[in-house]
Length: 120
Ligand code: THU
Image 1 (tube, rainbow, N blue to C red):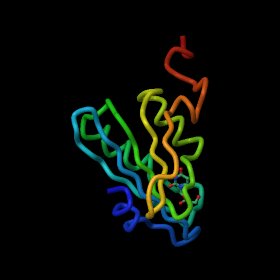
Image 2 (tube, rainbow, N blue to C red; image 1 turned 90 degrees about the vertical axis):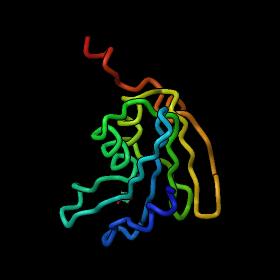
Image 3 (cartoon, protein in one colour; image 1 turned 135 degrees about the horizontal axis):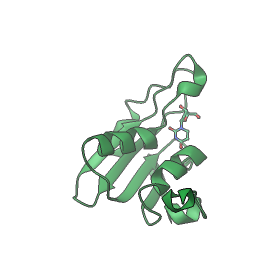
């Protein structure tokens, strides 16, 4: 599903297309792709597209996210932080169209993430 979502990526500037598929504990899957903008910093990454879609539909508990790129790129720091908000144990499957490259947990990708507890 992540690979299919990647087909919808809007990446005319970087030409680096990313697809994501986020599995909820309830068994649903929310997909996402990167959406770029002529004002470059306004890009939304594929992972955050998927998280925002899921949360806006009432989902907050996630099992895993699959991310597909051409070369097995891993989620950026911002996406790691957004995933960490919903759980250090979420599995992150990094893949290319040919298959799985790596499987990690959010805690591996962003140790000591800033969290609600840091707000006191
Ligand atoms: N990108 C993602 O969608 N997810 C990431 O975690 C890394 C980067 C996108 C943003 C931009 O459209 C392109 O990849 C190049 O940075």
